[in-house]
Image (cartoon, rainbow over the protein chains, first blue to last red):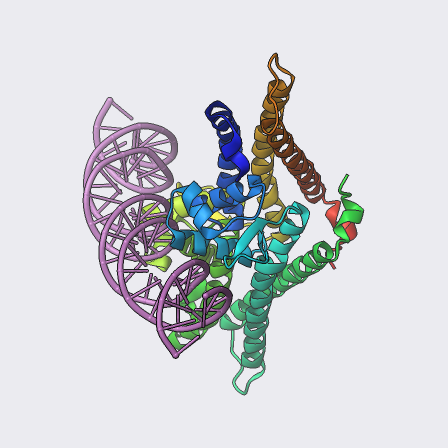
Length: 184
Length: 184
DNA sequence: CTTTATGTACAGTTTTTTCTGTACGTTCTA
DNA sequence: TAGAACGTACAGAAAAAACTGTACATAAAG
């Protein structure tokens, strides 16, 4: 950080302003399923004027290097930070992904997509299973039959919803969403 | 539940099928910031053939009534379940909101909107503060000046992103999103 | 008005998550 | 090949969250 060139007063003022912003952003980061301190780490990287090493982060955050390692990994998995290569340095360097639109859509492409897919799979399998049960040799009588049919209907509706969500994620990933909601 | 009319075998089979689905849906519910067991509670209500009371939920979930109370409240806050009135009963009854599209958009309208608004507020305030600092009597010299300007630029970008997100949420809330991504 | 049923606040307990320090494997350097 | 620097796996400690039972407030019923 080039902040050591500043007077103590300037340094304090800067940190005061940044801290409030980092606090706010970090707190709302739970929407991404991220812990508060990892959110703060993100905030730190957001304001950093250059890619940081794990040791630097630990220094600033006053936390262990291990925590920085796991925190960065979490952010990396969500593509919220990127690994940066710098020749001459053996250390890994990280910086935030400044394209927040991309971060947002990546989040859906990574987390929500996975949920959608497994849920569709499980639901289809269950529907199938009921189908088999209904069509079998000794197909169930009332009132069991009605219950199975109702369950099946509900799950069918759920599948339809998930398919919609899947398409929505497509639209975000492809950038089509910006036709409907322009960046500016 | 009308399930007591079933034979033990039928009951077991039904629960087996439902359980797998509830498990899957419940697990992915963390995307809504909901704990696993509250997710299971949601799953239970999803398959229930009629609105349930807290006592019934506690019975089925094998958990305390207190937990059911807080779980339902969480789901209620997110509009994932609705309170149902039934004359003759003194107990509160709850059922899931079966319109999952609505549930999805409500989630954004409730949780994300709040985050967006507070973040925009905090960012604007910080930008303003830097502006004042820059224009003041003894406006800062380099290198402090550059750092402030850079912070300001970054925050300006962030605000633009949040304004976009705000518009996206509008589009979801208004239903315009279904023009771009039709329900079917 | 009294009694009874119902939902929730709260304190304490259990479970889960986060955080740390050490140890170890890997990779770069000499 | 040996040595040093680096990131992470892992086990234990600390912190946070979830869960329970009791007690209480509220409102309906008698």
